[in-house]
Length: 159
Length: 384
Image (tube, rainbow over all chains, first blue to last red; front, side, top):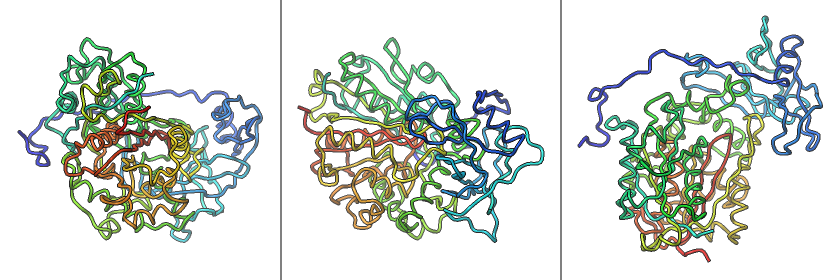
């Protein structure tokens, strides 16, 4: 009987899964495609308004879950916003998208873009001269070469 | 609908690394102990429900892969999995299936071998690949953000949260199944390495290898199997969000709504006075303050006072997490089911050194997904 809490790794054989990976290709639909095209071509943010509860959803999606209604009314939001909650990630972990370690530390922000009802998640610039706080105003910083994806925004920072 | 009860429970010796067993053998260990607890054999069982979070082990057909250990050969065998709430969903599934009368004696199993992959990376795969994964960093990041909003709203401190950690870790010392069985001090919690502000290493649950098996039986069999069955009084759940950005940070809406539904159904007006014991899926320190407010035990922002006053300690008016809770043990797919097993063993009087006296009503929760909650209430009396 192996004694609990005294298991040594060297006593056992392990089989590693190796470097194999499974690539995926995700459709973002009509709404997601429009959002990313506007972000890429005009650095603009667009959301969809629910005809029932009037909430403006960013990122846009076809269905308001709570009302179970289809949304069609486009509303421009942002690009400025307010920090509604955040953390600074400090522990290393593997990014399942890339298989690489995430570049910690990084700021993880929830931002209420002006005109939106839901929060937008993105990186928050860590700046020793600007300790972030809930309620501060923030603005996006865009990448030079944008490809129509979330990383077209580099991060948000003090407005 | 038939009244239904838990009549037997088994847990493995949970540990950070159960290198001595495969997942199948780990499952078998819990199942054998549950059958022994109920004084049944596998031949007595009508069907098997098993669950975990597939991406932790990368094995998708868990119900068939584990069939030699889970006892399901030549029986109806299905998988239930709902992310972090998997264990509590399993308990609710066991309740529904036996209450329907289509199953009389059902074996329900939750398990995880978190040592087999990168937990944070794997949890991230439960979230939207396009909108959530760029910045999201698993459970710790989402919970850290929740804590930041809760602290700002009410002026709650890291020391308040640390008090809840020392409660759970102290309770775990008396639980032979617990993973972390060493008491910690408030100073140790406050000095632990910072993982994601304001969460430090001792504020968050461990990653554990472990399994839990629970046998449900309906009213035609429960009292023949178990002298003091733990009757299921009711269950409720709420899944309010899809994307993390949709979350309202306070209160934990899913738990508030689920508990309000169940209290109303059971005529519970003052849960703090009417329920004798709770096993909560509180995976980090601040949840032990904020989420008991969602459960109606304290007014908004006043959860910490209840914790400091010792009301929820062993021997207090409403002991919470006498098992040591999730902060001491967290084999993720089993975690919600362990909460159910602990409540059931307390009602049966089989909780060993951690036994509370006179447990007539107990409550367990599950947490996961995108701030989703499950809740079950158990009673020593057969429901009328």
